[in-house]
Image (cartoon, rainbow, N blue to C red; front, side, top):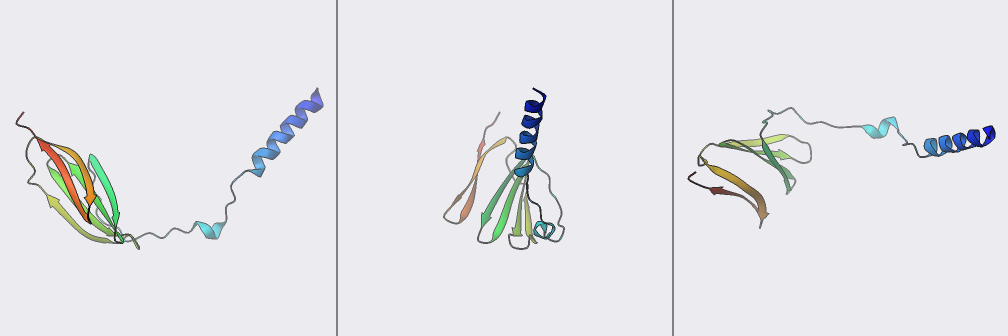
Length: 109
């Protein structure tokens, strides 16, 4: 009985170790871009288009559009829109024919 338990433990240990992940120091290199101002918002959407990353961040009445390069993660441009209606509800953001559309509904609550 003692040998069976030891054999099961050795087999379990061998299987666990044999499926461990191989890690090579040189393959874990991460390249980071230049720092850019972070805008935190309640709703965030990310899109990849033509080698660029577009982030749409919605926080209250403000909508921020940030554009970054997908190759080196460098910051390109930011725009802020503050002219949204008072009681709007974001419905979604969609890409269609190389353009992005922000859909919202408005009610007079």
